[in-house]
Image 1 (cartoon, helix red, strand yellow):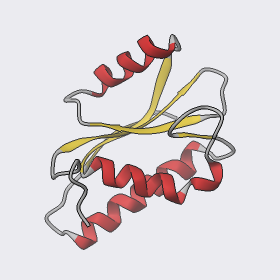
Image 2 (spheres, one colour):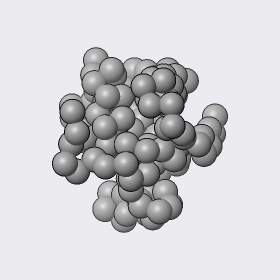
Image 3 (cartoon, helix red, strand yellow):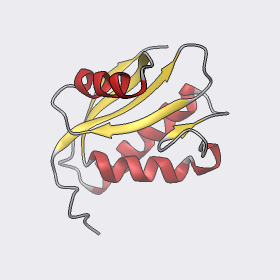
Image 4 (spheres, helix red, strand yellow):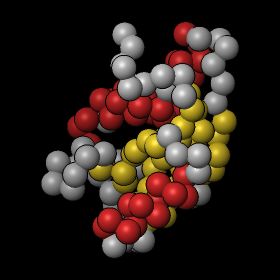
Length: 119
């Protein structure tokens, strides 16, 4: 199944949080740099976010949707789209990396690059 808005374009899947919170936002962007997306979020919300993890990958929208569905029981319905709580960063990273491994098995030509993991 192909989404009309999800092509082979590369993008980022990222995990952010803000100081003192136990919540994580899992998002995606097709921006060339992750910093631009984070600046946009900070300007909109007025909160200083910290990138906890990011990968540069193909099919970021499709993967983000799959990751969100795996983590549905942790979703913060009161915080807006893509926010999760009562889960550790390590658990989130595990799900993200498993989704990427699955895509690599399904499409052996597929590659991804882990950008950063900040504990």
